[in-house]
Length: 68
Image (cartoon, rainbow, N blue to C red; front, side, top):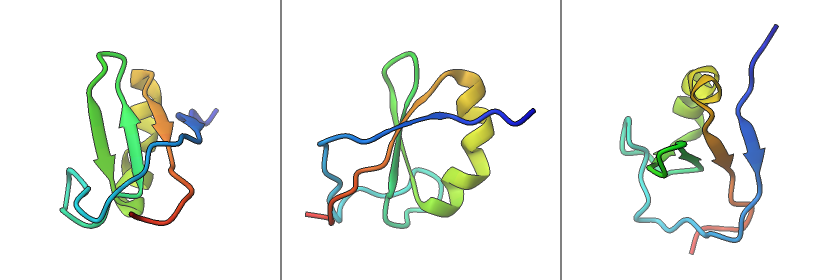
């Protein structure tokens, strides 16, 4: 059985200043932990940590608009 994080679309926009918390690449995904803390991930690191985030009950947002 594969566990995946909950993915939602949001109106929150990412900016060029939003960087991955693992490698400082441009952030593409925002993970909100049950505690309310936000983590920003590039696509590569989100894929690497997706299962763990799902187990933690994180809510995942992938802003669909272009960076502002």
